[in-house]
Length: 221
Image 1: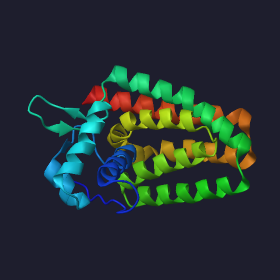
Image 2: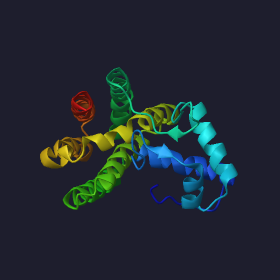
Image 3: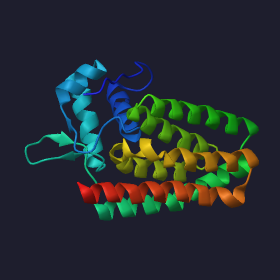
């Protein structure tokens, strides 16, 4: 199990465990097919078994995690049709979010995104692919958050709960091509220029490029 921590403040323990597991899935910390032990998770989060079971049950009910006939909980692996559907829906929502964000964005947003991009590149240089996946999520949702469209943002986040773990399969191949770095550079240029007319295409290129590579990897497994 990866090392997970909760803040220890705010919501109930069950809510905190649920939120932390969602964050781990969104950031790709948990990998497709990975089995999740209630006891190991509870130990990692330094909580009892009950809030851990409750959080897992909630994620299973939301179809984010799966439970096999042997009652073992695991992170699902998307098939090709599911990848196609999830990434196409991501395009529809994220293009809209990005356009709204760029139209409203303060000048400080571009600088914030540039700093995250630099962290992503350093993760590549260190061959820290978990860090790459996490920074990829961070750069997208830092941008989308500026759209101030809470409902659309939530739906987009739910799609990332499906896509996040699968993005692990893109590496280390994406380290060789670094195509994600290039598509992010185009996104950053649009944000810095306040170019609403081109940001949608930049986002679409980034998402569909990842989809095509992911389908190629899954077909070759």
